[in-house]
Amino acid sequence: MNDRINNENISISRYFLHTINDKNRELIMKIKSLSYIVIDSTDISLWEAYSRDVVGLMKNEEKSDDNNLFLRMDESPYRFHVQKSDVDKYHLGGFELSGKEDFEGAKKELSEAGIEFKLENDELAKLRCVEELISLYDPAGNILELFYGRSEDQSEFKSSQEISAFITHGLGLGHIVFGTLEVEAAHTFYTDVLGFGDSDIMRMRFSPDPNDPESVLYFMHCDNPRHHTVAMMQAPTPPSGLVHAMVEVETAEQVVDALDRAVANNVHISSTLGRHMNDKMFSFYMQTPAGFMLEFGYDGIQPDWDTFETTNSPAPSYWGHEFNMPEA
Image (cartoon, rainbow, N blue to C red; front, side):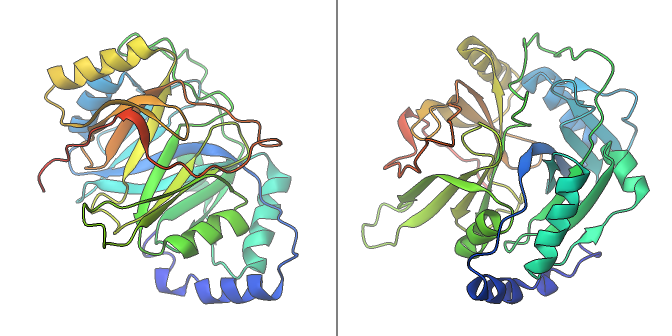
């Protein structure tokens, strides 16, 4: 999409001018979930081995070919699409809307906010297994696709590692976390235009120097009970395009088993086991072939948003999650 929409013409200034002049406008958009992510890869075979031997995903044999690897977690035709490229990095995220009416409402919301988007063609819609979709940039430069009408795969999901199930029903793939120095603009875009809500706002200092400024992290939920679907971290965008993605399983034992598989397959463990403070997730982090981390977790909370109040967690975790990033 980089050559389809000029990121410099995303009209962020027009968006802010609009929101300043119309604070009482009614939000139309309700995003159901993060449905899929697309990943660029110089060597798809690395992802095939990683997804099979470590993560426990299922290859969609019918859709995959030499240049595309489609990976399943559930009844969806895929949740991860790895495409042949000359770089290794996160490419985009696909977000689901409930139907045609919500899709048209989303286009109206974006137009009123002065945000440019592109209605994609039938060929891409077929590849994505959706009825219709649009693509756009957020203020941090991340590509998003908004769509409705995703088909389901008719065959049963069978994990390559005997994982009973990934927690996706009604919740989507999991969550993604971006790093950006445009964190305030990005946060406002996701809440005021895309309709996300704040779950937790964390402020922390990444440096041991007490004189260094704190960084803010916004954890945001969409229209489902998962604690957060998108998070924004005040930090430079990593070369991989993403800080991490998260997948969730049904038991703590399956998390520990995944950690054992990662170690056995010489995957770099980015973080020890731990329990997060905001979403209560029991998890560890490991590197992916694209360079971003994959959080493998269990037991994340599912708040009732009608009664939930945004929290301000004083730290990322109650215990554990000691990070050891690979050398560049």
